[in-house]
Image (cartoon, rainbow, N blue to C red):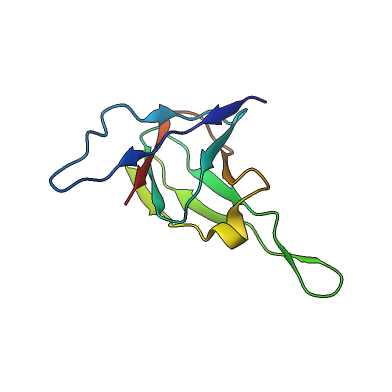
Length: 115
């Protein structure tokens, strides 16, 4: 499993050139520096749904109960989903990154946009 770093595009008045999204693979994890002001844009044109997981290492309370990871589906063929922003206190690891993965790597892309 490789770690792939996502570099967010900076949103500006007008438009943002999102013509170079990152192709995703089920065998990789994607990390991104998270300041709590970034959204992820997923597009799925492959024939299977893709389950996306945003990992959290956060625990709370006595006994260090784990906070559930955020999961959602990008539907097959015409799926377009936006996710975020992500609260750094919940989603960031010790390096200030969030960790994103998918279980389906056929024709799915992700683009990070900082607003």
